Image 1 (cartoon, one colour):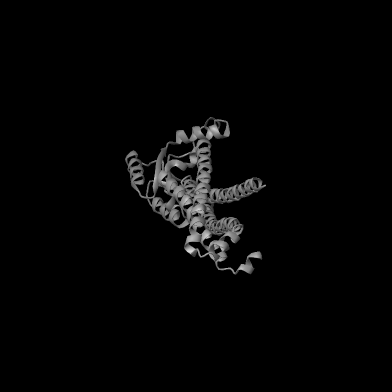
Image 2 (tube, one colour):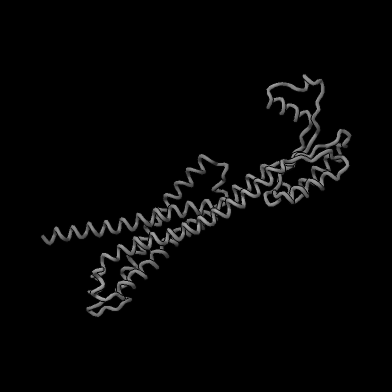
Length: 292
């Protein structure tokens, strides 16, 4: 009979530990994925901004030396990511490919102009800065027109700000929820041992002596849960990097290491603090309050 009871207690204890580890792992996994999203939000936003093109259309009488000098000046400018010269013949060929017919043969001449396509660095893609750059370029005598999608520039800038703000808000809310969930799991685990805690206290054990094994046990559970979460996060990173290489998740390995280490340490810290306050609560209860 006693052996059966011991087996029952052992299974109950293992089940309790398993639920704590699983809850910690799931919460830290979701928190890590959210952290990964936060860290890569700016990168993804920058990639979107850097796809916007400013087209500088040149006059027919623009000299080769002037065009070459402009292209070099643009390439050396701090706001330029790339500057590509596009002849009107290349532009016509590309346009004909897009519409599916040779419009030059139909018109009898090529109405397009030579141009330089400029992609800007992300930090300069705002409505004000792009307008300032375009105005400066239009002042050159051999530049016929500077064209870009003003609506798109404004929309992208505003969307990035809104997305960044709400992701930060969501991160803060989810972090609080994560702490509460892990704290609840650990507290329930310790609740089942409240009579043992009170018995040890009644026979003269100090609070620090009683608290120590609980702290160490739940720190180990926190570490185990964090390791499981890290394995799952690593799997997600590998999958995303394999199937969506344009995101460049592995371009900044230091940031990834910081994120993974942060998730691991967070699991330990939350487990430590939750265990400390849970045990402290039961240590401070009177004997008659243990039944409520």
